[in-house]
Image 1: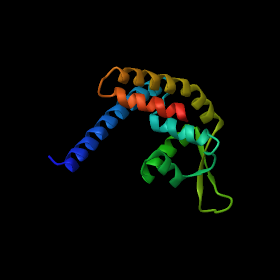
Image 2: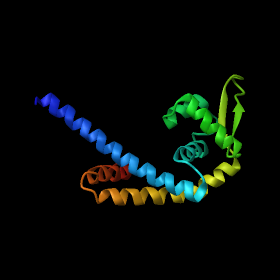
Image 3: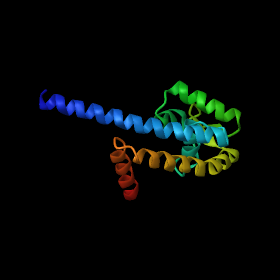
Image 4: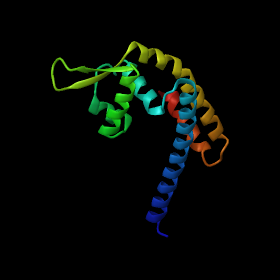
Length: 149
């Protein structure tokens, strides 16, 4: 096998390991949020973005990019949260064709209640993954990144 093939193989294995860590974390957080708050990970992430300082009045296509979802999946997600009165859609005053999503007071309240659950599930998932030799280096890398931020 050539050096180029070795490098490609190594990258592919690194990606599979990263995907495995991501799947473990997302599964743990999903179960915790659903059980305690009736929220999916994507619903939590959407509320988290909208309730943040840069999230107010975020256009739908921007939300799709932030959440790494298709436009139609983002619309369905917004529809679900709007039916639960956790967010609202607002027409742009500058461009009447633009539609923004905005967290409601109920959405911000639920987010505040769900954030400790999210963080605890994340901590638990990372602690569990740190005990697995194949995932420990990625967990350490995440810890290093979070110290710099």
